[in-house]
Length: 183
Length: 183
DNA sequence: GTCTATACTTCGATAGAC
DNA sequence: GTCTATCGAAGTATAGAC
Image (cartoon, rainbow over the protein chains, first blue to last red):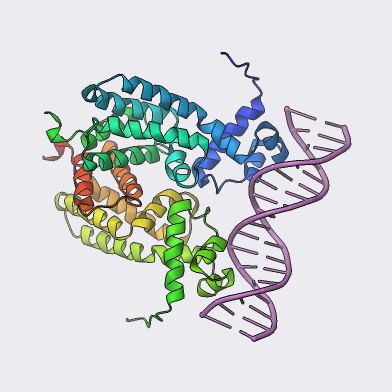
């Protein structure tokens, strides 16, 4: 199962630079030219390591997607009442672990990409949303979950601080756990 | 003060189509070619009515910017305690009145445009953020305001419903008005 | 694995006829 | 006001030398 990962610095460096570029100017706004320049190689080298611009994006969000799938699996085993707090903390942790990618998905990717990588993500996000609402069927709760999801994913890109996790968990709790949630 | 507005249907139609395009695929993702095709005219016609792609964007967000400035002026006259609820409702109303443009500002514009139109917007958004927190100096409150701002602006693009205003106001209140806000 | 050079497409924008 | 035709720049991607 351990894929022999060639510790080629170039490939990883491309990913790092691309992540920053995508996060800053968006996927369409970023150019291979600029990325190559910042990495210190040529465009051709970029396209040797990745099949194309889309492939760079796919490779970039793959780890985040994997973590999201893991969270999904964990939440699926919980009942609604237990899933909600777990979803909140799990989501915040996920987003903090993949700051740049999270912002990307909620600005660009959701808009213009129907590609398989993102198609697989959509049902997972759907499940996460449901868990965040405590599996509520109230449309208002669903909207609140969307606000929290997008708001937190968008805010972490340029925020820092070691207590950020706690702050985000708290704002998510306040927004999502409505007073009549007790019964 | 009444600018003689030529009721040229073409100009308005360009704006409408461009707004939808920008909202769906982003500013950089949208092309004059596609917009022209959807309007049913040529690229040259687009660029007769507007100086360039940027000018279309500027014309598009101008009304929203005007409303934001009006809200800012209104909030400036209130003390912190009165400003917070007014900011919440005012912001939700603003965003509902300019759905597509609001989403744009929080996905594209904030990232890659330092242009005058957006530079003027930034301090207004800053003030709005401050008002949303009840002029709090707690960094946690500021982050909560950012989450609410971005989350709501991003969610209204594709959400409908006549009770949407109430739902959004409520989620904003829950997220922003913290328990220890009373003193 | 990395490069230079280049092919091909699409972009935003301009010129000039109508 | 709208068009066709075209420009130069930048985009992604490929070919082939090293």
